[in-house]
Length: 112
Image (cartoon, rainbow, N blue to C red; front, side, top):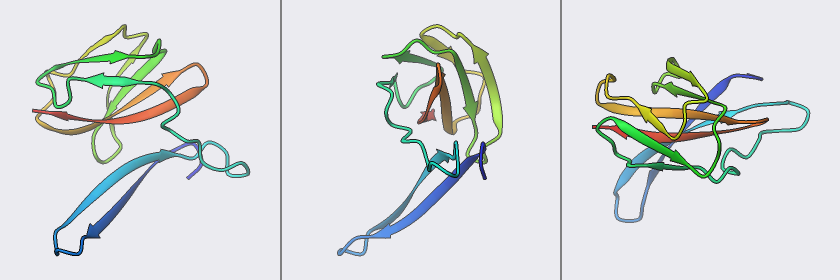
């Protein structure tokens, strides 16, 4: 839907019979124009996996949101600086929605 996060999951199998799946969140900004390429910002997230603190480098972040695999926002911060603490969250896979001016990128992070 326009203005929402949409999770696309695909499953694959190689010639040896090994299989897996991967998910990506896409944000549809404007249906008449298309889908923004979410990988255009030079964002670096580390360490990944993490036990708590995550460094965000490469951009000055206006807003960051931590979402679970169902797209629910668990944590939201305006101008968080370069370190985000997710140590209170359970172990698992999360998505960071990082907003910089009029652009946005979503990055996957694993919390151990």
